[in-house]
Image (cartoon, rainbow, N blue to C red):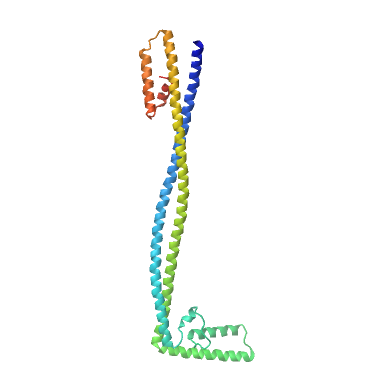
Length: 299
């Protein structure tokens, strides 16, 4: 019987260590669970903020796209006005409109000279004179040609000054071209704004996907740590039950040897307290440190 009690007391010590280890293991996993929950919640909060920004950029993009459509409609109107002004100028001048000086292609060799064309030719000859490209007889020919162009330009200018309709047509064309360019710039600006908002939406959406993956990973860690904590808790409870059973046996033997009744009020109170604490623990209630120590001591 003595060996039996000795072995039982040794088992009690072993299980007591098991209880402590299980409790520490459980608390460690609970701590990790809280840590993973905090990480997950942080990622989810960032995701919500970024989704709000994506929605804001979508509004900006849609508004910019609407502005693009409006600007294109306006540009189409300005293109039509330029075309109309060109045609009016052509009819009044009897030739091609002066728009050719704004970057259009050169016409055929027999195309009538316009003031703009004559000015360019005169400027070219003047530069060539300054560079010394015309000498001797060639110089006289070039000088004569330049004088003829200047005279022709002067005659055309005098004629144009007297033709109010032609002057108005040229002014109308220049105005239409300026408005056409302004409308085109508006289209380009709105399109750039729409593209920038769209690109930013894509970039933020990619970041949202990345953070969601991290949040999902953290949630997996939460589930794992909670499972480990639950397992440790179950081991803790089973170990406590074993510990209490051994303590009951040892207490009963001690009381019997001392002639103390099993219905002693102090022992009965201790057992009731232990049972109450076990009930609280099994129901998932939190126990204080003192209660945990009392539970482990067996009351």
